[in-house]
Length: 246
Image (cartoon, rainbow, N blue to C red; front, side, top):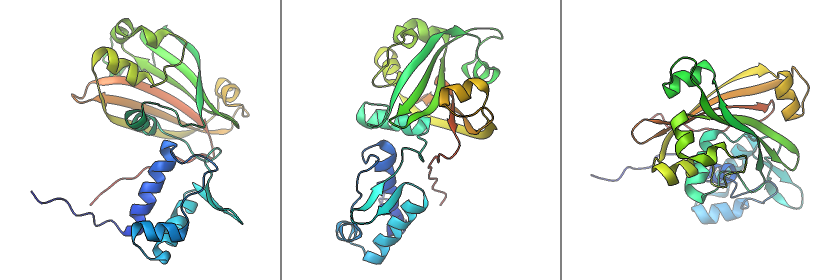
């Protein structure tokens, strides 16, 4: 079978590559991206095409031009890394958080989950699930708050899920080491809402402020659910995704 031909416009190929490096944390906030001249030389494209790529990244709120320095990454107050972004980073680097972020495990235990989690985990009505609740920070303060849910059996098999210590490689890594289940597909759904009192406290914002609410599900190769999660982050942050439709 002949290899697929990448017909993506060259500037979009540059954008995609740099965006992946930024979202993964390889290029951290404050790092310079290659200059227009460097991009043109590296990708064998015109400087006009390279300039178009940089402009697209700037439009996405991922970089800004600084006089006398060049174009630098700006993500601490603008970027929201989705669960899928974090899972992808875990698979490539073994670490779930970017270098400029860290998490504090606020609470763990067993409780009756929201109805959608009960449904997705295939639990009986009223059954309890294992949960881990955390707040993620960078040097500017809270970035997001999230809760991961697991089946009761998963909690029995992977005791680390119930410990309040951080799992450096993330929960999917701990599960994979014990069960062999490998994350394969991550699904994210989001909506907008007003911050509740508890969300406002954790995110250090005013109650009623706009927030993004998300749900994520991680599936293994067989389509079995590894974990389901809920997250919230303050308004003003962008989640970046790309879908190939042709």
